[in-house]
Image 1: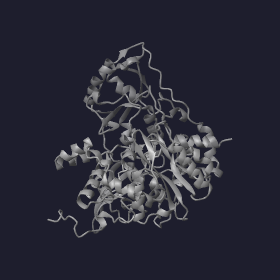
Image 2: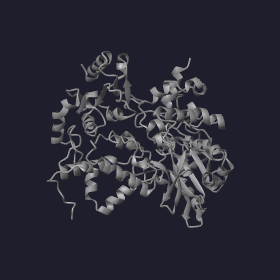
Image 3: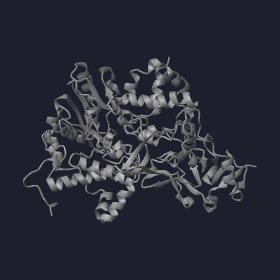
Length: 337
Length: 276
């Protein structure tokens, strides 16, 4: 019989998971922003939202992290590597688009070089997603062949039951099964049916757009200039995106000693591709926006057979000038025969 | 005739007779309450222009990006009073030739908007002076009052909390008409003057340097505050700097096209309270 996790048992679950050494993380609103943050008790969660402002990405790929400490002496250079921090974590209440965003990046971080900073965190983290029962004008998972109840990247999928009193438990991976075995006695058998997932209308025909992007003739199309003319070139879309993964390496310190850090970087910035000579192969904002779209829907799928977008819609939702992936792909759809 | 129709007609006329090559205005956005910038370059497209009380963004920054004005042709732009002040500053700082700018001015009036008379920045001189005499700088913002009452230590931790959210996306900078530097100091990396990392030190360095660079130049259009994806109340910093510039130097940013920059000029009777 299906099991449900009752909302009033959530504090017991948190306690149980914490006592076995887990950090429990979930959507929390603090200083007027919602993000995935550690909690002590269930009342800190903010679960009744479409999705948190910041994506889940930072739990696996922080905005900034030290990777190396160095000191230069006369005859030698001393270096100390910082290892990725260790610790089991349970993320409760992730959105399916965030969970799938993380799964989309797995092949990237394990491709030619295995990024232990990413994978250690991945291996030690259980993602418990909650299927969406509400969506807003910017949600577009269904246009990316995903859904408000996708299981991609989730270890457990919870489906809300009527009245907000709990969730129907769907075990997806062994890691999820193990995490929920420790709270098995807190679950109840139930025949209740879940609330249907949110209706998210399809916004564009992805396959047709991808064909257009793949056509080399369209690389120099005037379309790119027209669609991005109002782009102001900030990194809001890339930094809020659960799948944008670019980073920069920075040495901070003086001539003789310092710390090497791995920081988020963005293809929206002119500096991103600036050569030492001063030449910039992507010298205009339209070339930079084209790169972002091409990377997500042409280059990345070509290499990893995955779309580099989970349809969370944060790029459009937060854009200072109301741009985003949805509008661009919708406009491409209009160019199709 | 509504101001929207009136301005569409004017845009049509200017584009048809070649007086301007482009009209920078607003159009509808993703949701009914959103407005987005739009660039209209032919008379047939003027019906896309939308103008109502939801048109808030200061569009003047677009005039100084990607060499828009380098061909010496004119551009029309929809501007609220703050935007007109921005044009004055950009002209005073030699970033644009005001004769190339045709202003479609409007200002909020209750729940609606009303047109402002004039097309060239010079024609708005008296209007801007009247703004300076009745500064909209309202000192009754509850958050400001709360901040003013705090001890320095409390205020420091307030900003520490706020800046800890900064993700260094530079949306504040990119949205700001005054942040036109070809190469921002954080982008100068030979050597790297400012930490680019979004850690406590890096976030303080960035936000404080930006506040100083905007002192006496910010017209409080709110573009940065609205652009910030993590809701840092940047308006509070700029509001404080504006009050400071006013009280210490009787300076109202964007008063005229010949105004001297407050932090790069001096008068004999400047207050010297900061010299011990």
